[in-house]
Structure formats: structure tokens, C-alpha cells
Length: 105
Image 1 (cartoon, rainbow, N blue to C red):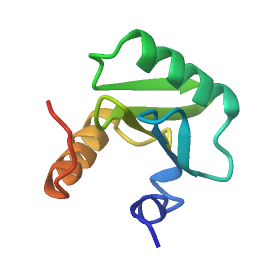
Image 2 (cartoon, rainbow, N blue to C red):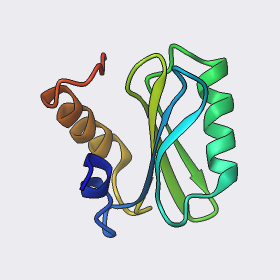
Image 3 (cartoon, helix red, strand yellow):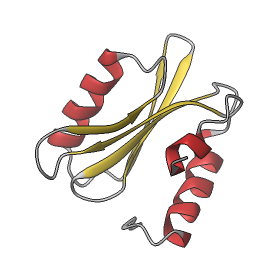
Image 4 (cartoon, helix red, strand yellow):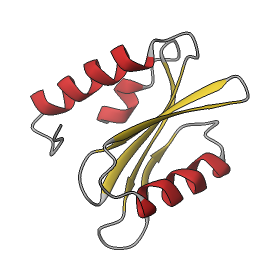
């Protein structure tokens, strides 16, 4: 079981994808319903705004959080639309720091 398997609980986090661009595009995990267009939009955003640390997208009754973990890795999470995005981002970034990942405010 991976870290991303633990994240996808079906109540708060519905789906997840970890993308690593360090040696070309590598999708490390993809949830069952994560739409290709969300992946494409996230690539465009992260490529054009490399200093961006996170962004929340609301698309047709769905909510996605994209979090840059490092310069070449980012996490895309499909979350429950009722979840407070700011509180969720605060908690997930706190967890990333505790795990020793490269997150920087």
C-alpha cells in the first residue's frame, strides 16, 4: 500500500495522481476517475507558473487540489466539493512536511 492509496479514502479524497517530471512525464498513481483534462490543465498550470505552490480548481461540481511537492513533482487530488479547501491544504501540507517531503511554503 502506498501513501497515495492511504490518501484516497473515498470520503474526503476521491482520487489522486502523483506526477513526476524529473525524467520526463511519469504518473505514479492515478485514481479511478481522474479525468484526462484535469491532468492536462494541471500540466499547463504547473509548467507556466513554476513558482505556484498550490491551486484549487472547481469544475462542474468537482473540486481538485494541485500541490507542488518539488520543482518536478506535484500531487493532484480530487476532493469532496463540500470540504473546505484552505483547511484541507493546510492539513495536507503539514503532513507532507512531517513526512520529510520537499514542501516549502
